[in-house]
Image (tube, rainbow, N blue to C red; front, side, top):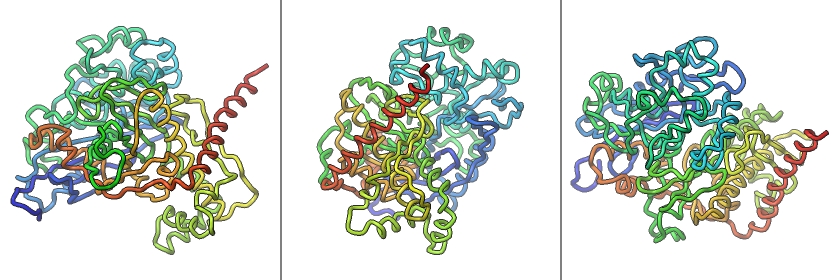
Length: 550
């Protein structure tokens, strides 16, 4: 199949997202040869409580793995890499699931990444002003693991906390399940658990927040052997896991990554020669990877640590070995677009028309916007409709959970045109949020010239163009749309020993597909809309102050 004489090597990348498990078979050039996906269950027993099942997720991994290697010579499969959302998996000492809910349902043993039950716990953790918080932008997020652990201790002491033997980040649970090795990935522990790549765990932090029990037995419950992403684990795939996954026993299994970081790995190292980009010939630190799906993550790397208020990190070697990572983020992006579109009165009409044309609702909306824009640039349709997108609080750079969404400029009509324009204003608001994150990173010392987009929303041309126009930067899209899966496969390739380093695998396996340049002639319009965007949040804070006043 491949040109040249080199024998074909294959790697399996597996990505556990919010709603599904996806797998791909990828070769040593980064070409995706097979893909499969399988939905996974989610439970929301009460508002802000989101749960999953580790048994359900592993069963889905087995289904997709068997599908992507069908008809392939198994001897050519060299490595397996996992990435997943940073959800919290709880097991007892015998590695059996424990309930993370008041119902006592041990099948539901995962607190999902987007779960916001631990608001009071994270508030108390932030009040300590402990020095480890410097590495998460000064304020810990409710989506990180320490507040969730504290919630379990305070709320489910007997049914969960006292029986727990292992607390895994989901990516580390998957690599344990595949190899029997409980070693953790530096990525998860550094990004979500306050671990330091240089100093290890900080006993004083856990004691100060009331989780001193984790310090005992040298942190055995949360991890005391830590490996960089892409390192080979134990003796590779165990015979039992090999049978489950339909893969050869003993193949290399890599220390894992969080899903967004796998996306960053899959795009940020691409060779950009010949595309007329400012980042050609510049260090990789001039690139920002934006992984946009249910939520969005903004990954920037630097040679030296840069502290950005409200942006997570700096995390050493958490994505690209040897570099410090800063991670900005927006808690809901894809989920917000769905929310705005599906909640509109004209949605049933939109659905019917899109189905009749055999299009997705978003492809239909994009063509409808082209139809109604007439002679003006499409983006100008929102001249008097403005959205502030923090319907689930602000992750970066304001790090304020209490912020809400805002829409100004509503009219009495509710037709398809109104829906299309509201959709456009929402996409623009998400892009303005990215601009705000970039400005915070640049004022702290980053120098960014190019965006590298991947994830589900990068398949939407309107979303991509708005990010280019509103940030004023070119957007690079990968040849392989499934960059997160390529990133996971890069880990497997690294663990197999076929590449000398993550950087080498990244450069060989990620390729530029398309470059979208900003329309500079629209810059003045977007600068004005950005001023309004910043005013919205300023006003929201003023409203809150008025309502709190005497």
